[in-house]
Image (cartoon, rainbow, N blue to C red; front, top):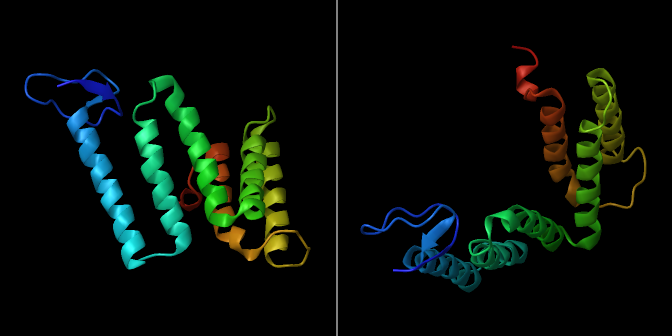
Length: 170
């Protein structure tokens, strides 16, 4: 049985163990069939929204490509796939807004400044986002982005401090 480059999720088949980052053809095809069946069921029975179906189709195609990529290209491909998925679900304007807010928060975390100054900047940007959410200031974004912004803020806090928000007051 030949092996194709896939994530190291395959178990040994017979006496042959696929190399690191490779999976045998049979498990690859089985996974593709399962993802294909899932997308057909989602479409046929309309179990979720159209955005979720588009995301499932993106995941199906993304897995098929990601699995056969060389290891060094997998992380950049996954990043691109995630960005496309964000824009696909939220539309272009809202998707780019979320991506921009996330980049600003992550950039603040990586600034070569003291911990206290980075924390202060994060609090100030968080306060600005809160005023936008409360509609005290006007912004050209819809209400659809705010649930995602909460996750971006939480991730930035963890990156900057190394602690989860619930760990602040043990």
